[in-house]
Image (cartoon, rainbow over all chains, first blue to last red; front, side, top):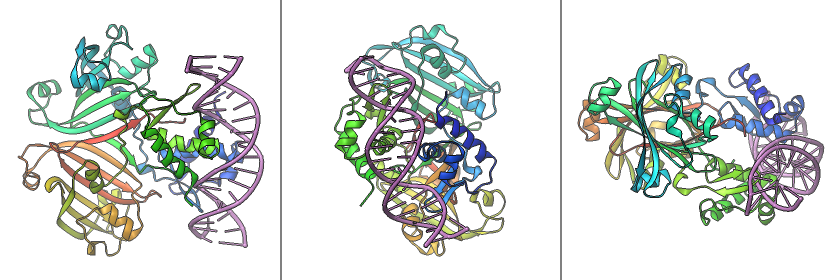
Length: 235
Length: 235
DNA sequence: CAGTGGTCTAGACCACACT
DNA sequence: GTGTGGTCTAGACCACTGG
């Protein structure tokens, strides 16, 4: 049996999908009773819905459905997943894949000792068969024996999950803008000097270990980076 | 009296700050007893710390301090707050501020009816007295009577909070890359064709009402967009 | 096996909005 | 005043790790 929270989360998402923006949900005690859970359990499910922007609460007044125009989510995903979410078919052309020795700041960013082995994978990533971005990924070698023997033209996140049971749970990303150099423009099919979106990512598993360090350059005419930011802090 | 959660949140942050990466915290029952709260209350505080990346839990094993290199937060902030967090002194030069009638897709994005009034504010934003970005903000006029009579060279978020009790709680942002046009290059002090980071933001209050629609163009040589992404879903 | 975090309950009291 | 979400408690059982 799956947890109650997951069950009522799915049920609540269904109900919310059928409601209008700013419509009020039943009060928590009623909702808890209707779903056959305690109020605490219900509130745990409501909390995740609230954090993902589907609902909002007004203390003393009620819980309401959020405006859908704004609820688009911005969860962590790999390139393939990202492209499918945008309605495009992901693809890859492998440019190079080799073990390398990492030193200095690169080793530090990868979270390994100076002089240790890592895998370097360069790919041209496609969306609907057209170039979308050039991506260079670096992974520590130790946790991923035989990585380069696998098919590297698909989603790397899927490969890590299925072959090594490693999940990229969180990623620190930095996004900047550059103009295309001759090599990039040739690969991506744009003119030299055209704007590119540069994304630098460090991916970590659920225990905070560094799994990947990736640098990607996206065609700015085909891609923009979407995200939802929230004020944080307690409650 | 402030809530227990806030109190123990602060206390836990202090303790965590004094611990090494991957060091284990006391077990939950002990921690709850030491802080004089129930385990449920403690877990609520731990949940916010976990979501903001300060700690991670391993079921059956314990709760651990995250690696600090990765814990930099990416909460929503206005330009002024953002610059101070980066150790720079924010400033502004007001380019224009006027009421405008919004129509079509702009009205839709602002969440107001076609033909309604809005305030348009254009500013050159400075960091350490040097140009950092050109920002055009649009706000619905109705909720903010007399907005343009205030000093607009400081943080807009502060102004909304102190004068209108409106808090921008969440923002939907889209980041892309462009090259500087003649006007932008003149204002920002860069060459034409230099890369700029284009940020399009829709800011909402805690009830999901649209508060602002902003388009900013940052000098890519001085600014990059940092964020932490997480896998979401239940539990 | 013992120890840990994850889930879940039933109930209480509070602060706040006014449907 | 009535109804709502926000906070907090004490206790129970489960699933998983091997500290």
